[in-house]
Length: 258
Ligand code: DAK
Image (cartoon, rainbow, N blue to C red):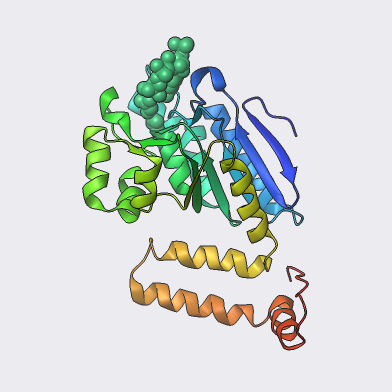
């Protein structure tokens, strides 16, 4: 499938999606978000793919939602522009691991997209921020909820209220990103990490992602209970039998995704 605003390619067992509006620093318009959601859903269904990487280019992961597209909208327009909100919901429903490979500007909705992914690999030039207050709005794509759960309240408040940006090393320090690499390495490193994850037992990976995400969505007793149920479920998979047998026989497991 070809898209207008993203580039999609398979690299071994990883689906790589590049946001491709370089002239506007990869600003996220409704069409782009819908394309991204669709491409992710297709990779989510593809048995040969085990993880996805979302990236932009060296100058910008994404400088936010497209301000020119939103400027004249009313509340009702925003509410009815289902493409924007439903695309965010569709991204959240992706079951396979998502890694954001971030370089340059990662602002507003761009940062919200990155932190909605499961892990972030950054280049040394990455800059993370939520500048929406400059526009007379505030973050609407999850940052007020996800940022405090990631970097804590103090830094979140500064980012949301006072346009504090984090450079790559600060983002690493505060736990927003997993790794920082030089510009010519970050994408390769993200793809390597994604391929490592993609080589693991597919059902266990999906349930593990779901279980970790529950930690941010529910209280402890319920989260631990959900973890236990998913754990029991794994004992009815072919891969659990194969994984344990392979350990006992001192060989590499061959995952079936069943
Ligand atoms: N939208 C549209 N165009 C953008 C853009 C954006 N967010 N960011 C940059 N551009 C365009 C610029 O207009 C410029 O276009 P031309 O003038 O050349 O036509 C081109 O990209 C290059 O930008 P600059 O000339 O400004 O480049 P600089 O290096 O001087 O500055 C910058 C880089 C990143 C500091 C600056 O471009 C900037 O401040 N950009 C805006 C950042 C921002 O405010 N982002 C937050 C946007 S609001 C929702 C979910 C999420 C959201 C909304 C709804 N729902 C679920 C309902 C999210 C909202 C946002 O993200």
